[in-house]
Length: 119
Image (cartoon, rainbow, N blue to C red; front, side, top):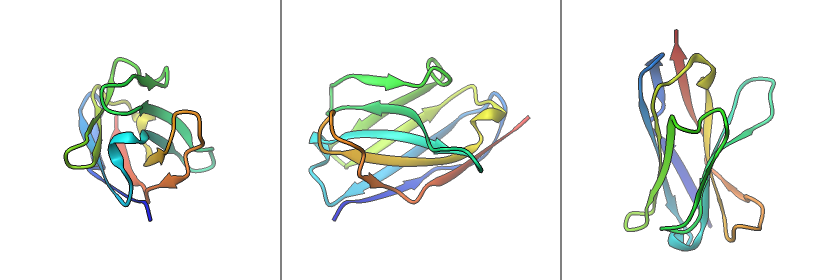
């Protein structure tokens, strides 16, 4: 059973930084495509960033490209999201997600971590 547990959320000022972590278990982490999504009240969950197996390509939403960086450590089954130059519009619940292959759907999700950016 795949389990994803996010941490690192909290309150930051605009222009500041936060680093999210996602601890994964119950899967062969190094072979999975991993991603971050975010959601605000009343809106659909939206894509933030993804990374295929270690050493593979990354992808970012236009709204975060150049400010956020996704990375992974396969030795300790952990996914990261470094968030710099934070803006109030980055305020959301951030979710970690996993899928077995790049072409499949994301079918494993964490419980989410709240990020709040004050102006």
